[in-house]
Length: 91
Image (cartoon, one colour):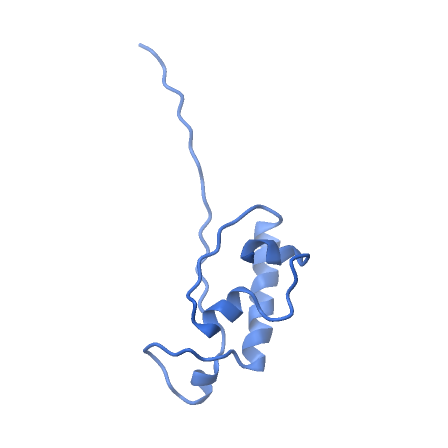
């Protein structure tokens, strides 16, 4: 019986919600809000990126994000540059 080559591709999937946004401080939850991240939310986003960067390293990855401000700011906080190690995931 002929053997067939089998190729297995393993992918890691990380799901991250947006961090603290202005609508949280206004006690608005649920629904669809195009809110900016708060200063605390930006700090939380940086921490998430650092943690993911430690897990992922310099591997090529694909990032999918909502185009709402809070989600896109969590995926790529202002001030990040292409040279930042964890940023390679978000370009």
